[in-house]
Image (cartoon, rainbow, N blue to C red; front, side, top):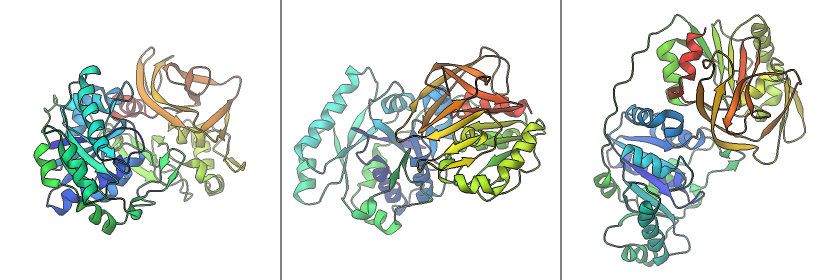
Length: 431
C-alpha cells in the first residue's frame, strides 16, 4: 500500500480538513484510500473513519515502537494511505517528521495560504531544507494550499514554488468545511461530519493523480508474534462517553478474548464477563445520564466482588467517587476508586508518558515500564490512603508523580495506551 504524510506548518492550519478533502478526492477518482493519523489522537481519526467507512490507523513510534508503527500502517487495507500529521511537521520529540522517517513516506506540506502567495513557497522551502538541520531523513515533496482561492491566488503559489516542490492543488475557503471545537479538540466525526457535497466541492481542486504518483510504499515490518486466544470475555464500554479507543486495541482484545460491548450512558447492565475496559471519552458531558443510568452502580457491585476493571482517563473519571463538570454540577460516579474529579477551564496535562510498575499488576510486571499518552482537563482530589500501581517517569500522572489508582481489582489511569504497549495483552492474561 502506497502512502504519504500530510504535514502542517503548525497546529491549526487545517490538516484535518485537507486530509478529508484528499481522501474524498481519492474516492471520487476510483481509489480505495486508507486513512491514518500521526501521533496520539482519537478525534481527527473519527472524521477520517466517517469519510472512508474504515478505521483510521494510529502511527506513533512512542506508543508503538518503530516496528509497531510499521505494523499498524500495514494493518490498513486500502491502496493509498493518507496519514494526517500532528502539530507542525517538526514539533515534539515524537514529531510528524519522525513518523514519516520511520515509515519512509514522502511529506506533503499543508500551508495556510489565506494571506500569502510567494510566502507560501518560502515556508515550504524552509520546511524542506530544515530536515537536514533537524537530522530527519525525510523528503518534503510539495505543497497543498489550504484556504487558497483560485485564479491569480493559486497560480501565484504554484509559480513561486521551486522545481523540486510540487503543487498538489488547494482546499478552497468554503464555509461548510468548518468543524466545531470544544475542549480536547474538534467534535467527533459521528457528531459533526462535514457535508459530503461540500467535501466533494473541495476535493475538485486537489490534484489527486499527482498525489498518487508521489506516494511511496514503505518497507513491510517483521511478522507479528503469535498470540494465543484465552477463554476470557472482556466487556468494553462503547458510547458517547467512552469513545476513545484505538482500532488496534479493540482488534487485539478480540484476538485474545471474546468481546462484548455495553453503554453506560444508556444504562446497560454490565455484561457477563471476566473483565471490563472503560476507555476514555467525555464522561463530563454525560454526568447526569451516567449518575442516573444504573450501570455505574452495577459496576461498583461487580468490582467490589472482585471483577477486574481497567479505566483510561475518562474511564478513570467514571470509576471515582464524584465528577464535577464545568457548570459546577457534581454527579455521583461509580465510587470504586477513592478520588473526586473536577473539570477545569484549561488542560491539566498533555504529553507522551512513561510509567514504571511498582509491583506486579494487571497491566505490567514489577519494574516494567509502559508508554502511553495523556491529555485531560480534569484534576483529582485523592484520598490520603490511596494506592497507586505506577511511578511516573515522564508525564504528570494522577498525583505526586504517580498513576494507576487501584482498589479491589480495579485500576484507573490518566494514561491512554496502544495495543503495541503490551498493556492489553497483560490485562487479558491476568483475567
